[in-house]
Length: 209
Image (cartoon, rainbow, N blue to C red):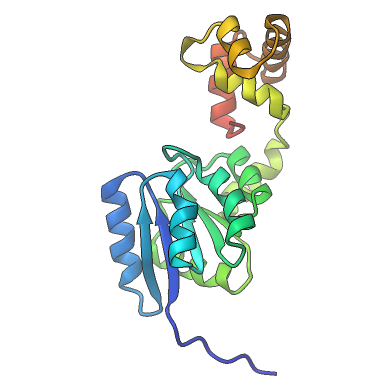
């Protein structure tokens, strides 16, 4: 049985915190006859609300957004707006980000420095049910292996940012100070670093956080 050709333009939601980049992407995508940018947001915690209001076919999400990361928003979209396909579009082509994006239910992952024609084609492909992943990043993710940190170790490491003390982390996560020290020691060992500052830098570089 032959499918009926789609006559309505593909509805796209765009989440990008940099106004100039967001405007440029919206303009370029809007020049495609079969694509329509129906919503633009600058914060991660606005993504689901905008998707519920505008019912996009595809959501283009940056990762590092204020309020909520694009990866967390992707996971929430999968539950609350299951008909919306997610394409992660980021400056940071980190292997750990790709793995987390796929786990969150994203249908694609591209870096921002590609041509807009490639992005438009990716939007059409994920809508058609394909997975679209930057080839170089896919190879890097395979060679890098999985995230060695447990979810709780990630929580502790995130809380260790900005000079937080062990007592601060313990209070925030409702853990004992000795437990926090054990987690930090484990994280430092797994990342092969000398202290928690280096461990945090390495985990971010790998895309584990």
